[in-house]
Image (cartoon, rainbow, N blue to C red; front, side, top):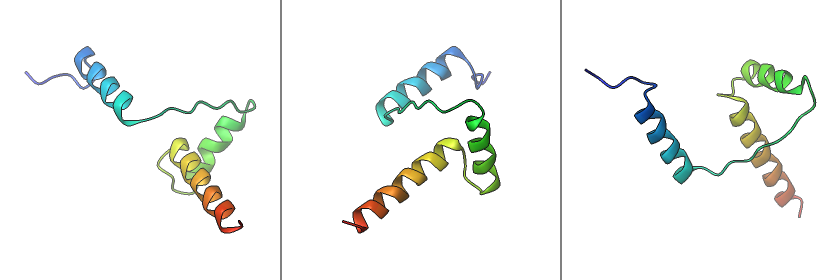
Length: 68
C-alpha cells in the first residue's frame, strides 16, 4: 500500500527537507492586509503570497543597488 500523502512520516520528511533548504522570515501585517496581499498575488499570477513577497524584495534590492 502506498504511503499516505499526509502521513506522519511524510510530514516529518518534509519538515527535515524544509529545515535544511530554507530560511524562514516571519512578518506581521495589519489586519486585512494579509487578504489584500493574497488577492493581489492571485490576480497578478504569483504562485503564492510568499512568491510575491520574495520577488518584491528582490526587485527592491536590484533597484536600490542600481541607484547606488
